[in-house]
Length: 302
Image (cartoon, rainbow, N blue to C red; front, side, top):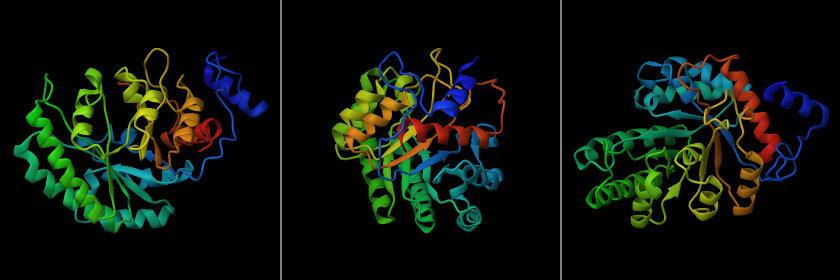
């Protein structure tokens, strides 16, 4: 019997899985979180769209995430750049009765030659997010190819981030630092460089990218608890690859849930499915999102 069938049968029979070797039950309830919105990120759709622009499949995305029982949608920035974006997305929010939580974004913030362009871009995006009553803006900061950033580049990055934080505040949108691997590799040199310059900046860690950069997600949550306002959640198998949905890998979501409760996390938690290159899904994305949502409810109590 494979792991997927075992989980399905076990949940149906008892509502509780066996205690794992690390001492944490893989499936439990009763953490009694206050309401923490659990949304979905669009990467699993964007990967197969030209230029990662999900505009052509926005209706499907909102319908799928509503079907899956999610509390909101996190888009990538591309649709919000279009003049017709606000009207289109507002109609989808109303039609499917599911809000836009925010967007993820990325730019080379260390490169001063791009600062004017980035500020103009973010102003437009933040204004559109405000019109749609969205509240979060998760950003990656970019990295130079094949080397670490200089102190001057980290200074430039921090100066720009402070300007973008102000733009967010003016629009009722909270900027958070969303990491991939490069920000947290090399003893988290890039992220530490930003935090040393802006200690109060909000964080929106992707716990799986932390793991892939050899950073313990639990230690990270505890260490930066006061900064963390947002999370990306994704599962991983013991062989390091991504499964089809959350709950079909080996990530200990019970331990993550207990840690979030202990640190008093009150932000948004976002499921971001990702599949390895060449992977052929066995089910529609909407069903993987639904399975993922149900698994987090049972394991993390959110």
